[in-house]
Amino acid sequence: MKVYINGKFYEKKDAKISVFDHGLLYGDGVFEGIRSYNRLVFKLKEHIDRLFESAHTLMLDIPLTRKEMMKAVLSTLKTNGLKDAYIRVVVTRGEGDLGLDVRKCRGRACIIIITDKITLYPDKLYKKGLEIITVPTVRNLPEALNPQIKSLNYLNNILAKIEAVNSGVEEAIMLDSLGYVAECTGDNIFIAKGGQLYTPPQCMGTLRGITRDTVLEIAAKKKILGHEHVLTRHELYNSTEAFLTGTAAEIIPVVKVDGRVIGGGKPGDITLMLMKEFKKLTKTEGVKYK
Ligand code: PXG
Image (cartoon, rainbow, N blue to C red; front, top):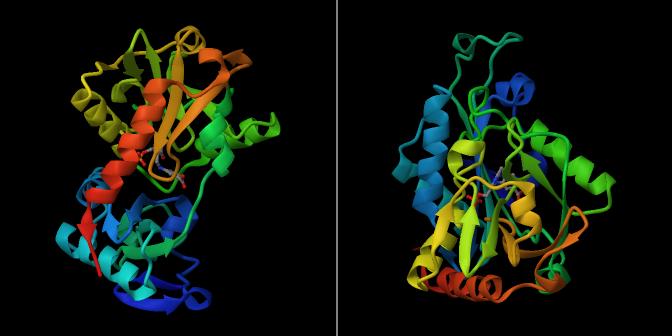
């Protein structure tokens, strides 16, 4: 497996960057997780646009154009001969000194592209559905570190994941600072009720997930109303279906929330339809590579 670092490919064991990189010292950097299916990179432009938007807010200059970044992703996939892959793009502030001041980072930003295989949850959970719980750690306040920035600082999401795993479940629901449902640690959340879909709006400390947007598009095509609406835990508990969306997890049904059974404890019809349609889309849509 070869890793791209600043335009060159390195064997995994040689793929190393400086201990003075501010990505390590301060979590000062941005990232994206992207997937390819049968040599088609799904929503590549959307992911690269979000990466550049995250970097722009952090005043982090990426020394490639968006087009060049897309080419770098495709060439990493080709170099590794991967048909189906999970792609991690990381851009760090680069080497600096032991201080926060970004002006001391005289080198350029560091670009890393890793391609690998990934399955987030065991296959049987896609059939049976997940149990999730609400955890104490809340999502970042948008006025502190806006969750739209996919930064290298994911510590509160990591804490939330630890809290879920400590309680014996695979995933955590994170609330916003007002106590409304925000999202999970690396996935967005949806519920269905009365044949309609609801997901928290992005202003509530929720990342505007690319899979989330895709699900809303599929639902619209299928004439299912999708709402971006604040959600309370009460609404989650009393939904008829629930599921999570994310690039790594794709769409995964949820059948239990904080001990309350959802929709009879089985993945619902809308969820199953969306999973099927999403799979179809990933087979036909995307940027091709050989
Ligand atoms: N919420 C958060 C907080 C995320 O980090 C999503 C939702 C889903 O967004 P997309 O655009 O992928 O539909 C993410 C996704 C992983 C992993 O390895 C994924 C993410 C972050 C960290 C880890 O599963 N990002």
